[in-house]
Structure formats: structure tokens, C-alpha cells
Image (cartoon, rainbow, N blue to C red; front, side):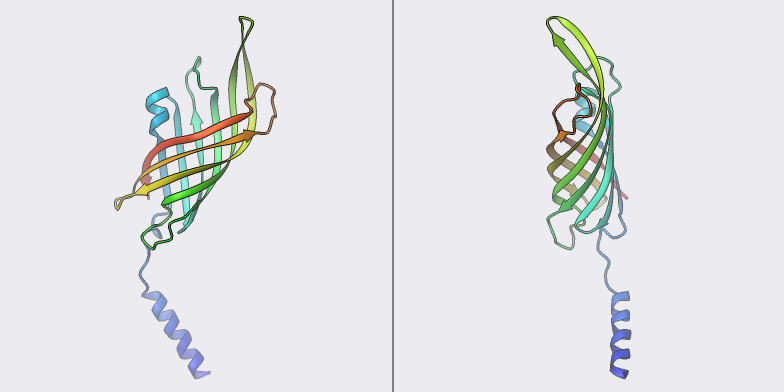
Length: 174
């Protein structure tokens, strides 16, 4: 019994003095898609919660303020979950990742049929996968590049059958 008590006290003492990883005090990231903003004037912001060293979850919100734009989505919300593959101690949820996502979007499909221009609004949901890479420097600045795609669930006839997800996000980890 005495050996068990000494062992437990030693483990508690050692764990109290263990060095924390860099990612343990930085649990949130806020990012903006620089590519969509500069090329098309489309605003997509993203929040990610880094709960563990090899995974994170979050949500992206896209707002397209232009009325007659070639981009079909006007508003979307995209929850996601990511698994990171670099397992080194200094890599806290950064490096290569695979992302599973769902997307809920509103938009307008432009239909050019026999010179009859029609706009048809839609709402749809989609699921998909993305691949990407994230870099985080010592000050917590984030650069993230990813690409993926998904399939809509077909709630509306006007919605597209598939969708693209991707971007070049820059942001800050707190």
C-alpha cells in the first residue's frame, strides 16, 4: 500500500511539472479567405477550435454581397471537422489535414435556356471532403491552403449537383 501511495504521489508531481505543448494554450483560430476576397469580392470567414493535437472542428460563413455575380452561392454555412497527420510535439493541429464538411447554402442559379434569362433561387445542403495544409508560425499567424468537393443532397431542382470547397485562408491563432 505504501509503494502504491508513493507511486501515485510521484506521478502527480511529475505530471504537474511536465512541459506544456505549444498548442495547449492556443485553442481558437479566426481566418479569412484572401483568394475569394481579392478575386471576387466574396467574404468567407472561418473559426476553428483546436481541441486536441491532431484534430479540430469549426465553421465557415460565406457572404456574397454582389447581385449579378458569376459565383452562384449568396450565403452559406459550412461546419467542418479536421484530422491532422503530423504527430510531432511542436505541431499542434497544423500540417497536412483531411476535412469532412457539410454545407448549407442559399444561392441563385442563372439559367440561359433559348435566350430566356431566368434566375431561380435555391436552398440546399451538401457533404464532402477536402485536403489541405496549414502552417502556423511562432506568433500564431496562420496560412491555410485546401481544396475539396462535395455532392448536394438535392433539396431543390435549381441547386447544382456538386460543389467546390477551397481557398487560401490567412488568420491568427489565439
